[in-house]
Length: 72
Image (cartoon, rainbow, N blue to C red):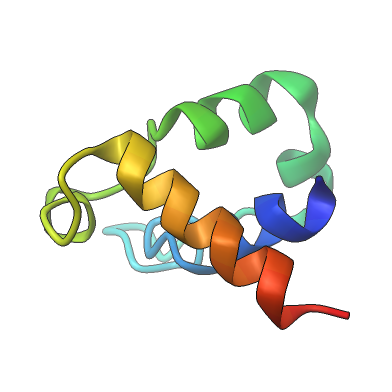
């Protein structure tokens, strides 16, 4: 589900330029299959972002639920 995926992406600081190089993931990068897998696996979630939840699965589920209910 692309709504859930992009909701997850929008909540990951690193992918939105909050890193030492101010790098941001562009559309092509985000749609590359190998990168999508890394995003969904939680590879780019910072420690501070993941501490808000019990684990990456909870974090991903929370983001997915937000996307399912918030985008029409």
